Every structure is written in C-alpha cells, then in structure tokens.
Length: 145
Image (cartoon, rainbow, N blue to C red; front, side, top):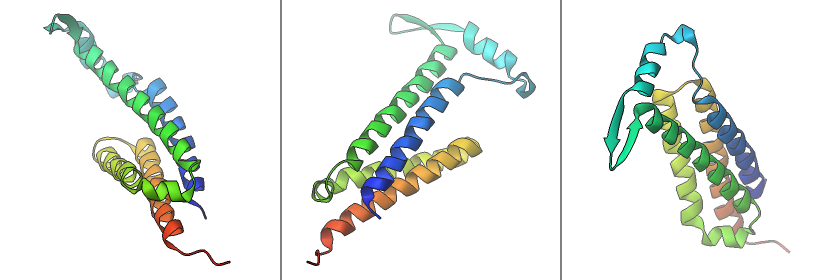
C-alpha cells in the first residue's frame, strides 16, 4: 500500500468532518435542556477591544474556525497524497506533525466529545500516521530492479 492512498482517504474523511462540523455544531435538541444556557449565550453582551459581542458569537466563531481548519487539513492531505515519495521524505517533519496534531485532536475528542467526532478523529489519525510511516519507509527501502 502507498502513502498516497491513506492521504486521500484522510482527505475525504476530513472533508466530511468539515462539512458535518460546520453544519452541525450550532444544532441543539430541546431534550438536552440547554435552551436557557443558549439563550444566555445569545443575550449577554460585552465589549471586547471595541466590539460588542456575546458568548454565542465566540462559540460560533470557534465552530466556524474549526470547520475552516478541517477544510484546510483536507486540502493539505489531498495535496500530500499527490506528491512523489521522495518529496514526502523531505517533508517528514510536516507529515509527522500533521499526524501528531490529529492524535491530539483524538485525545480532545475522546475527553470532551461524542462517538462521531471520536470515530472520525481516530480513523483520520490512523490514516495520517500510516501515511507518514509509509512515506518514510518507501523512500528508505532500496528499489529492486
């Protein structure tokens, strides 16, 4: 198996993760009993550096920022999947850092979130780690002719 396949799988999963997060993070179910909390988040205003904001504004900004990050990560994974093995070997720091960042996201997901983001985080981390490992292995092994 080649690293490119794992990067492409990660890219598709990241794109789905970005779409799901961006469309779903503002949703709530009345059964959760958070209506009063969400109302407070939307109604309590404060001034920050000359801007009038609410906690809801900060929540929405953080949610959209994460969705944008996942979209960027999907594009990066797709581009890494299109690189030759020799180029990936030169980018070892980038490929391993990418994998380690998603390992950290997996830890955060396991601690604070629920099954869907946990599952996506685990599979993406596995794909990125496998791709980083394979890209290093493919270059370090001499080719038989």
